[in-house]
Length: 249
Image (cartoon, rainbow, N blue to C red; front, top):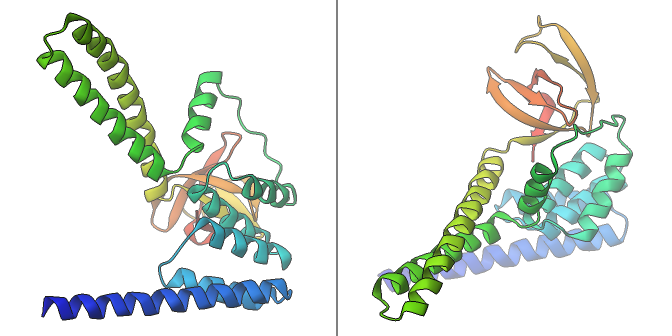
């Protein structure tokens, strides 16, 4: 009986993958024929089935860009970047799209080592950081084993200093992994989709008007209360706006 269920499951998965590939192929064909709306429908249908990839989000972003839907284009480029950080094509198109939005927000200068830390964290996706963390910790355990079990003085000294270095690297990697997981799993970054939205001082319409931002602007979500999000923009300014005015990356 288990074997039958396994075979049926495999067949269903194969059919699903074939359907997804067919939708992607149709989407690519529509895109190449400049039928961008149809391409978007096909790509979105694949995402609704639970499949995602950097290439799919990238293609979807390009399709939205070609119909001048900048917020949707930026959102999908950002989602592609999460899965493939450092991809030159994604970065190039994302920079072009960002250059076309109304808001030109200067980021708050950060201390060099904080910039370096964030840049390093963004250089690899969550999967790679997870593998690196586990691998380095495994090497630390191996070094500890050599230190405690080896009878050779040189090996014990080498294992001791290697263990010190590896535990520091392991802590750093686990920190990178946890921070990246926290940001991505909670979807703490978002793109504004309202053409114009006024950021408030409190999570309600009666709050004082603080500043105005426009569609396509990237925000960092600090907290959410009663369908309102406390957000911060790149220059450090923060306030509240309706959760419906943004879409999470």
